[in-house]
Image (spheres, rainbow, N blue to C red):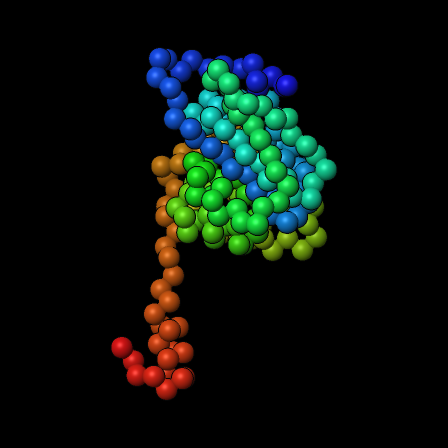
Length: 185
């Protein structure tokens, strides 16, 4: 067991509510992200901000993070490789840290969850970084790199994030209906 199993922050006499940080690398190999969230400094900063659990989806990576039960006020840490669906993990998360895949980004934003997107610099044609940077500029999420994740977490103000507006499918539906010969509503 690493340091995090022994670290306890003062919680007073009230039991702390479960606040989970869910980390996903998707189907890719992104050990740099898993290693970054598994550092003492990042775990300590997450716990300092009130998070109680860290759940890491490691994908095809070879780096295995340290597990911790989270007893006595320490940060609980667990991981898994793949899941048939990460939807439930996203729904139960208080904060999501994700690779820059568009599916993961938009699914998280649709659920209204605070999001830090970490760009995988090892990808050759990294168009994903452009999406993450644009959405960060619009204040829908935070964008980081593995080496800047700690700073991003320390500096983030989740209250400043703006909800991502859901798309209006009505014009597309009307177009399809007209094409099929159905009347407009």
